[in-house]
Length: 65
Image (cartoon, rainbow, N blue to C red; front, side):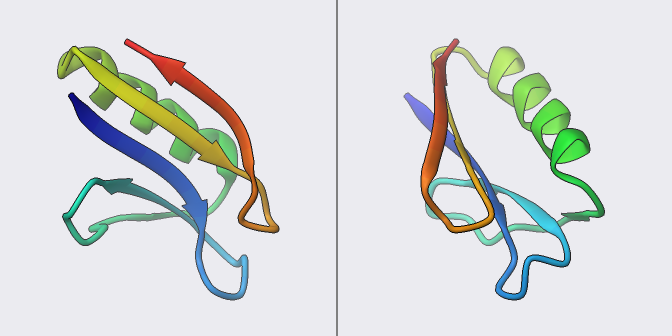
């Protein structure tokens, strides 16, 4: 199962979509666009898990596809 995570960057000026054991390649300006991209990736790569973090790096939501 692939694991994807939406997490803010260090100073919370952008949002990253990370795949397990792979460095993130894109920085999104807002959380919603990062979540949308992550959902699309997770949906295309079933079975997968998506974890969405908040600005404090705490788990806010988890989804399984």
